[in-house]
Image (cartoon, rainbow, N blue to C red; front, side, top):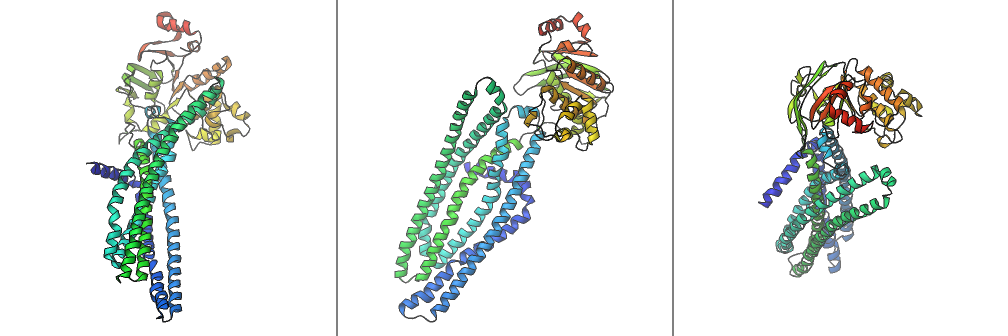
Length: 592
């Protein structure tokens, strides 16, 4: 049963990485041909020495030599020719394998990253960023080693080992059988140690992923750590996590060393048998001295593929652990489906209707519990409520980053899942509260929403979002390279740039999460004016915590416990909604 399980896992791995392997099918066939040629040259290598020994040196010692110098010269030239040919073939084969391997790595990383880019927020919130980076950057090379390098090398070494064993039996079947008695024991011990090594390496890769995630969080939050005076505490935690990772690595290293030692010991036993029994066979006249030299050379040559197999057994164990971690990502499904006849969303939707909308997280928490709502073009709407009321979840569903557990959202009468997914997301522009800018030029950050946009369009979007003055103050303008995650910019500046980026996609629906945070009164007024202008021919929804800034909104929607508790203009809610009035007094212009 266990053998079938291991075979099933191996077949699953081969099938899942099939697209990358198939792309290099022709190159792999060429490498296989070069491996055959290299194997033939390696099998021919002992014979020039045997000929020199039997046809020149032994006859000279017996006084029976006939042109020994000619035999020595020809044998030496043959040995040089074989060695030179083998070196050239191995060089070309190694270079070609490296090209295939690096391209395999590139393709697999692209496939994984593309898959990660399509997975919903729920996946990314439940997986550590640092661990995902280790899977992408660290585990993929391990998979490449297993699928490309080790597969080719093991096939070559198996071919060489079979050829060597055939030559051993040709030279002396009895001696060959005696030498190969160590084979079954070697296979059993290798298999046993490889199984234990795979488990240890799987644990090691997991610990390295945890350490990488800790580093990512600690470095990203370095300002918070220093402001709290917690640097020494974080360093202690790093030391503890680092020690755990090192211990896991040392356990894997000890098992790998034990595997190597077992292989070396058993191969040494085989060589000792070959020397002792082979010498006796020469004395018996069953072998010539030159044939014994060839036999010993083949026996030593057998050590190389067996040692290589042991080394690649460790690499396959590492590759198996890495492949399992990579496949865990590739096996994830977003759950979002696009109909074959999906339509393009309207450029300027007239109406969004939300009907009996429910959303339950994987933990079982119900964020939305029956939301019913209608939004009209030309409205500037505020979505307010206490923390956990479901505001951000509703925005996420409107942009179809996730699908609801039940209920539906329609745009101009058509359910969201009837629209093409990427065009829909461009038409429903979502500006998150946590402004995300990348460590590239400002131009590259803006072009993320509209790769073909011209400089004029970029500047127009910046002007609409009240960010033009900011760009003019940057040393290189649009070509200024921003710090990682927008470091060096204030929160308000980052929000304006993110809003400009969203506007480049010309969305018909704009959802802005907390646009007023950290702004002074003039800044709030400028943002309100911008939102009001955008709402002239769009649906604009603002998720807000500060109720004092909402008096000019067309409608305020009050969410409570995942439901619409009330809606209306600010003064209407103040006059008729006690809970809204209570929160307004408690907040006093602060966060809910």
